[in-house]
Image 1: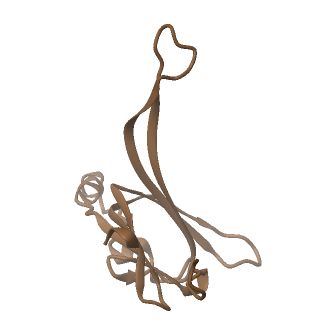
Image 2: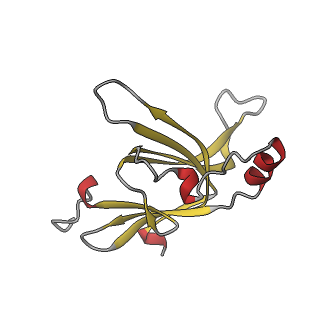
Length: 148
């Protein structure tokens, strides 16, 4: 039986990249995927088995856009640069990060995403609305608190 009080809620969750809290995050979605390809053989109408052929991690975060606190200012997304060459160099030199989701009540890191890179980000600006920023990430691996 589950112990009462251990239900994780958004109000208790802290999202950080490289130990730095992502300010005003609204939501985070993490996807861990196994690609299982069907092994289909002659003489059998059913799939013989499913063979693992890939493992992927993607995730996204939606935040409120804060002036002066951009992804480029934090060094998480490469700056454009003054020339095409500088722009390419900034992209090629962009490092990988790690991301964590932590339960602030128990101080338990319940999810660690390793070798993270930002794939894209966009802003949504509407009249009579708070400006939001959506960020799409790719990563190499994700672990949960059972794998510490």
